[in-house]
Amino acid sequence: MTIARARILVCHPATLGVRRTAAAEPAFLALGREFPTVDVRVELDGGAATPLPTVDAAAWDDRTRDFAPFDVHVEDLVRRGPATLVVRAPAPDAARVALEMLTRWQRLVGRRNGASSTPEFDRLLKHCQALHDASKPLVRADWNHALDTWQWMLRLDGDASLAAQMAALLHDVERLESEADKRIEHLAPSYELFKEGHARRGAEMTRAVLEACDVDLATAERVAHLVARHEASGDDPERALLNDADALSFFSQNSAGYVDYFGPEQTRRKLAYTLARMRGPARARLPTVRLRADVAGLLEAILARGAAARPDGRQVSA
Image (cartoon, rainbow, N blue to C red):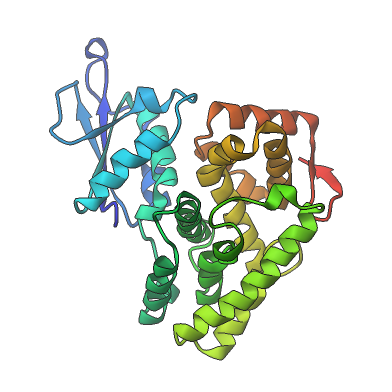
């Protein structure tokens, strides 16, 4: 399932004419650089109808709208074959809207680098997908998050190693045992201890998965180490990269569902915890993420207070 092309259909009001604006041009170029495996085409159009299904930019910009109808629409397009993502919007908005949409659905793009363009990674990807029962909503969400974390990792570091990318796919594999049918993290007496246990058990499961996929022992041990420590801060650059990708994926893929499931107060704590895990360059990516209005409000309140909880429970500047 891939989005093979993203065609950006730019429509100006007739009174302004149809022309490419200098201000819009850098944004389209940046969009192409951000998604180099996607064919980004800019077509200027005065409002003529397109036979291709169009994602409505005005509806997308209504931040009270949930993601589900958009997701169903795009996933249906992709199931039919290589999809063209058509955005009808004025030129200054088209690149921004397209970036937000491609960020939401980057799990369908399947970007890889040399390290992950191997039969070894193909086996793991197929095996991991088979482990996730898509008929269970929480498991399906976890698989989308795994794919999205992997794609965020490659956006943050195009040279990410094979072990780091495998860890991105497997970092939450433990949820297949503990939270496939209902979430329990909010019931834990200590959120930090719960997350440590989740990571430790996930590393044990990771070793078994990688053995089943015939991954060499040295790579498997490195992946398991990253999974075991992915909730902790430290000096390991690959662990920090995994933390950043995981955090960005939470905001992009899971934050709206989280507030629906747990409510605003637990979500406020989760947002603060997640924000505190992120390094500066990762935080700088947050404006490219479409957040639902209620999540955006909670995040703005945290940032306004200027403090967020570190994974170790201490306060840091937000």
